Length: 236
Ligand SMILES: Nc1ncnc2c1ncn2[C@@H]1O[C@H](COP(=O)(O)OP(=O)(O)OP(=O)(O)O)[C@@H](O)[C@H]1O
Image 1 (tube, rainbow, N blue to C red):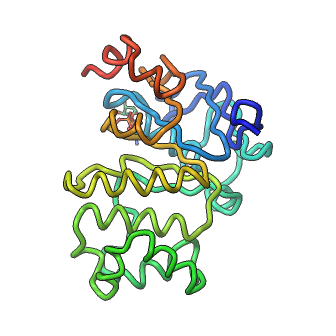
Image 2 (image 1 turned 180 degrees about the vertical axis):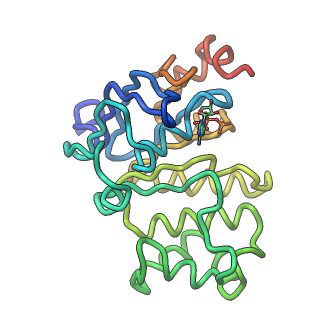
């Protein structure tokens, strides 16, 4: 069945959210298919991180729907959402810096993942395999991101929320991460917040462009790339 006909995995409708009385997201709606990546673009402060945190359950929405596989999750705790299949890799380091790479992986996905799952991750990100005994603090920016993504994947999410997975990553490693995200997007759902617009539109099949907490533009990545309004919404 094509993605157009398949029911979306994640459905967000009329979402309003923010911090205390300060509203950041306004009547935001989007859908995410069961496989493939969607990109969330927008200038600094547009509300991209707030959107991911609201989907993950760290921020309680003021109103609106968040449905995962048809189940309403808007009022549930982050732990329940993780159990239902929402994996979140936040912008800031999602790793234990003082622990070794091995220990970080052993604690991934809520703890004690099977050895085979960890081996799968080491095949997926071979660089991590050469760093197993190092503390995570000694990893490069790219390796830290790989470790954070691995930890989230060990929880076997249905949808992976990625907040700036190439931030602070050496340019030579950015392509490697992009390739891995493309691999992942063939078998699961990814919501990708990314400042590298070209990269995001290459990895994602569709894009939503945010402006001041609302969706200003959305459509297939191939169309958004050429939309003259895109630059306007990305300009500082
Ligand atoms: N903890 C907070 N308390 C109050 N306001 C916040 C908080 N975090 C973010 N904001 C505000 O929410 C708005 C959206 O911020 P958010 O981080 O979601 O944007 P963003 O699109 O992810 O930007 P960036 O690309 O800079 O990460 C901004 O005006 C920001 O100042």
